[in-house]
Length: 126
Image 1 (cartoon, rainbow, N blue to C red):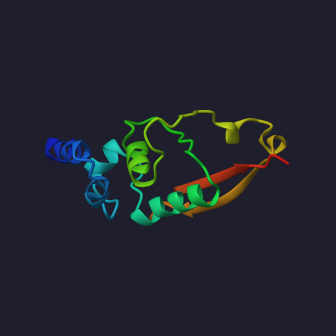
Image 2 (image 1 turned 45 degrees about the vertical axis):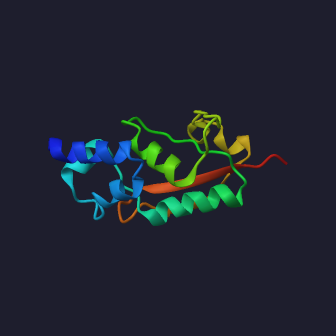
């Protein structure tokens, strides 16, 4: 990996400049970028997430993945939740009896033109 690219990301991270980090791989074609983040969302993708959080009166999100945490950090900086909010990891959409757990797909959006998607599930309590 090109250490100058990684150093750029680290400096922007330290300065809380998530938009500038996104701009480092605006076209999702930088091979060095793909080594530290498997998918690079656009600002539009992050606004979609923020809109869903607001519409559903949600305090946070569930993120599934195994990486360095950069994607989660960008989502957190661009949408919240604020300091002190709880975090939860429980991948219910992948449980065998998912349909019986009263979850429904609320919305989805493709991440740029990656064929990867943001999916939002809402649990119906009625």
